[in-house]
Length: 249
Length: 305
Ligand SMILES: Nc1ncnc2c1ncn2[C@@H]1O[C@H](COP(=O)(O)OP(=O)(O)OP(=O)(O)O)[C@@H](O)[C@H]1O
Ligand SMILES: [Mg+2]
Image (cartoon, rainbow over all chains, first blue to last red):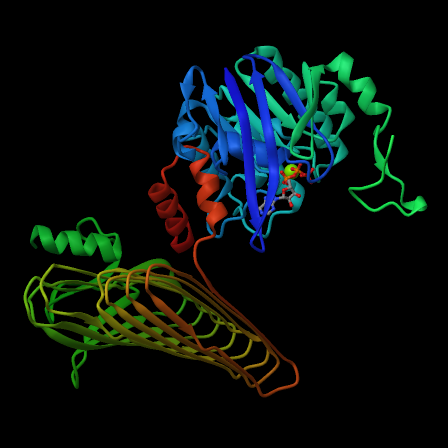
């Protein structure tokens, strides 16, 4: 399905090279739900953007359904059936929710009988379909619309970047149900980047990413207990430890 | 009427054939079609080129179409249109000017529109400007719009320059009476070596008058745009001026707004922003399967819609 071969990504900060992804190899299988988790700044979003083609890996290869897509553009990857819901979705002056949903579905979305993806994220169609996707939307509303743009596509690989962020309790429940339903249909591979236990519970496999590397990967039942135990390495500031150094195990 | 005429009329006034209600169609300086109705009278001016459009008090849900087209190359047209809108009337006025010029000589249309909007009347005005033709002749439009709103009157003026106009200076002067409300909405796209200058002067003289100016523009290629919106508050009033421009290629956009409060209860706000299309907006649409160019078009279209 999707194979990453030794993906590395360097960025340049004030002329200095920073290694953000330090060599990640992964194989994602069809029909499975993966949750990527790990500390802030670990490289999760960067990895998702590399898969979508938004960032270009410095080295390594990406294969999708036996096709080398390392040099494919964002548009080409989208047409192959890869989708990405942004952690921080952009706002548009003058583009309406309806238009965004039509663009993502590739056809006019049926809004009369409410059979569309807004309902799946707990938004009432009539209230939102004609709203502008601009600063007038609240953070949570924008985030839910972003998720809806993925839900109304038929994707082979759907990447959700912290879909729970900023979403209220009621919508969160609805959202986890939506992910479960998607997963049951086994239409494609689902990757959710998340810090939420209830999302982690949905996973077939959990992938722990930190410091630009996959630290652990395996079935939920194996990985989840170790995560819930807490970090096995932390900086003890009370003993004068500096972040990134003086690791206490 | 030729196919070209019909195409121009459709572009600037969304007309398919003869409009409903009152209308006057002006082609190369001549009236080529006119109809008055029981409530809306259109009469030719005696002292200068142009027409008077007289709308009876209380006229509801009627419309007037007064499109102008220029098809003869090198034609220079200057016209005075006066609108007298009676008390309590509620009407739609559709103007617009389309120029087709394939020759080397300049075509120019200067329309001077004056609106006298009576007490509690409501007017929606739509004006579209458009030019086409590959000749070296310039297509020039210099509209002057004067608006006088009496007590409680409301006007929503939508002025759009679609494309193909080489040079434009658009001037709008408005006087807003007590409890009157004016919305000036401008949308403009310039390309090639075009120049566009907008001057707006809105003076709020009556208590509780209000003005909203919304300007959205896109400047492409080497085109230049200048905005001079000005609102003067002489009474207890509210005004909001918002100018947004997307700049592309090698264009230039200048925005020189002025808000002038001459009364302690005047609340005047101004916002202006110029910038290129946000990269992440393009990326977002590309992740939905659009190409970069399609994404850019979708964003610009939405912005100017
Ligand atoms: N273009 C860039 N230039 C410099 N640093 C970058 C760049 N892109 C990402 N980074 C850095 O790389 C690290 C990984 O960022 P990333 O957004 O992938 O983290 P994340 O795991 O998604 O974190 P979070 O849980 O907070 O969303 C961060 O330290 C970030 O500051
Ligand atoms: Mg992230």
